[in-house]
Length: 149
Image (cartoon, rainbow, N blue to C red):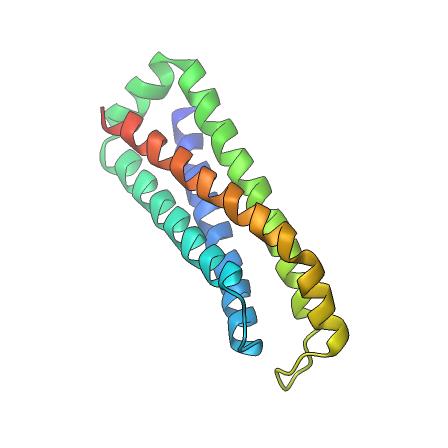
């Protein structure tokens, strides 16, 4: 991956975080009794988005760092790209789960019994996604530490 591609990848993932956070926020507004899993996902994804903006800032403000780290060690660039790709896959899964639940909520914000059952059925999946998002957040923190060395 070229050095410029790393900055673009971080920016793109930051945008995906923003979109996902907006969907989670919509769910939080429409479903007043939202379980903690949704709120925790919201918080973790905000943190990942902030990390992406920080990585972008580091790479833009220190161009020699980007070229020395990634051009000097192509394996590191590949690992960076794969870490961001994995995070993207997890965020897309979160978006899909949240979107399917939002569809069950009517315009007035009340939920039908079917939608509540659907959420309860998917709660285990959302908890697994939360666990995975937390792992992604930790991995991104490690990437930031590598960039700052």
